[in-house]
Amino acid sequence: MALALRVFIRTCVLLLYFMVFVGVYVGLHVYMAGPASVQDSKEYGAGNGPDYFPVLVVDRQEEGNETLVLRSLAKADYAGLTGAKERSWYLYRVQGEGLLTHADRVTFKVETLSEKLQQVVITIGEANGQRTSIYTYQIEGKKVSPRSHQLLASFGNNFSPMPFTMVITAIIVLLMEKFVVRRLLKPAA
Image (spheres, one colour):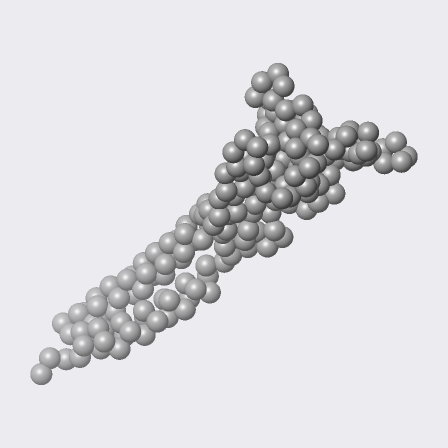
C-alpha cells in the first residue's frame, strides 16, 4: 500500500511539474509576443508641429532618376514656405501601401481623404524589433500637416521564452521537492 501511494504521489507531482512548465511557457510566449505597448504618443493640431518631421518624398537626381526616400523636413519646408523651384524633390502622394527599398524596416500607407487631402502613415522599425515609430501626416497642396507620432515598444520577434521557462520551472520543482513532496513521501510515525 505504501508503495502504491508513493507511486501515485510521484505521478501526480510529475504531472503538476509538466503543467507548470507548459503554463509558464505559454504564458510567457503570449505575454512577450503580444502587441507593442505605446511608450509615447503626441498629437499635433492644425498649424503646429515639431521642428522636424519625417515625410516621404520623391528625390530627383541629376541623371533624371527618381527615388522614393524618407526625408526629415524642417517646419519651413513642411509648412510650404520654401519655393518648389528651389527643391530637388516633391511630396509622394500616390495612394497605396509599400516598403522603402533604400531603408530597412520602413513601410508606408497613403490614403486619399478628399480631392485635395491625402494622409500618409509611415512606420519605422528598429532592426531588433523592440521599438517602432509611427508618423502620421496629411498633405494639402504643398503643405504638410503633422498629425501624430507614436513610439511603440515590445520585446521583439526574436524573443524565446524557453530559458525563462526552464529557470522558473527549476525553481518551482526545487521548492516543491524540498517543502511538499518530502513531507508527503515521509512515512508517518
